[in-house]
Length: 264
Image (spheres, rainbow, N blue to C red):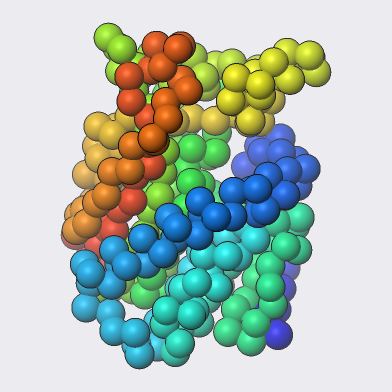
């Protein structure tokens, strides 16, 4: 059976944790079919861009594993692999299907446990835009950068980091719209204002969110010493945010390897 270990000290804003504990069905059930398709694509991208065989006994770390559905698909694709899932939300962890090949642990992405070990594959699926430093957009970017740098400590030589993230780009000044979303979503709003923001698509109102542009994501990977060995750009077929001035939105799938020496 999957096991649970003691939690690492929590340093992520508590409102992020509360948001996920209160919206388990939104992230686990309502988006399952889209998530399944994206996950299968991402696993195929990993297989195409690395030397990993389906029989390789991989160790995979899923940071922000949620309901564990990606881990389940990964273990199906790599029958000799084992998965270690961490998430800040006990509600999300509780939605997992237990397995002898899967270990679950409550932990903060910004403060992974010292004894977590090393992994051949690290999965980071739409996690980084939640790594909010509430009072500062600039410090939030720095926090995301620090998170990426921390992956060096747990990534084995020859290992790969799988990333799925969301991008939004605005007309004129490319980052203007996402800076406004960051500002609005990190405010401590009364209920009626929170509900209004959720109706226009900002589900993380009061919890905070920081989306970046494609250029910003690539710059962060470059600055933190990662090589992009594979990338897929998946523009959203419908663009509901265009009415608010956004010119492009979509999902990005990356496979990264490191070019810097291991950090001890």
